[in-house]
Amino acid sequence: MAITLYTSGASIGVVSHIALEESGLEYQAIAMDFANKQQSSAEYLRINPKARVPSLIVEEGVITETPAILTYLAQIAPSSSIGLPDDPFEHAQIQSFNAYLCSTAHVAHAHKMRGTRWVNDEAALKAMTANVPTTMALCFEMIEHNMLKGPWVHGDNFSLSDPYLYRISSWAEADGVDIEQFPSIKAHRTAMAARDSVKVVEAFYNAHS
Image (cartoon, rainbow, N blue to C red; front, side, top):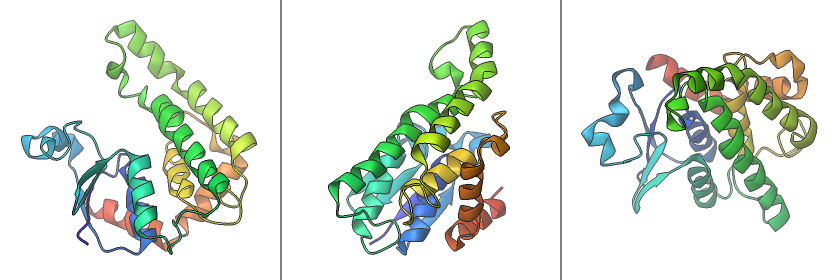
């Protein structure tokens, strides 16, 4: 199966990239040049008219949006570390956590540099940016105290949720959040950084920066 991932080291695409490494599937990763707005080029818009990453190209077509890509990879690599559990409740817990990161934490982060998606008033944009440390800290508080079981997100077993949390938590300092206030999340980030999949992915982006 031919798999191509369009991604960027500054984006949420890192999550799908780590999942691909964990899956053991063969793939090609293409780093998009956001600085030169490659995501808005006519060539890329034919792949993903949303002008965003990640985009996963497979034999059947294009898959966009991180939760959809993660679930697809888990389904085609069921014996890998990202394979979905057979138990419906455990499966739902993974989807619930990932949905929270997608719909709440990632959106709170995006208010810092993508506020024009929601408003075009200069004062409102400044207010949204200024509030990011507070909203992101609230997200991390929720995860730290109510969602992260440890050592991995859902307990003893690695899952699709772990690359997702790793990426979101990697934005903490830049978003004005003191990661020291969230020791479980910090420990999770450290454990993720030690995984071979993450080392491969980080090396890829360093080479393409």
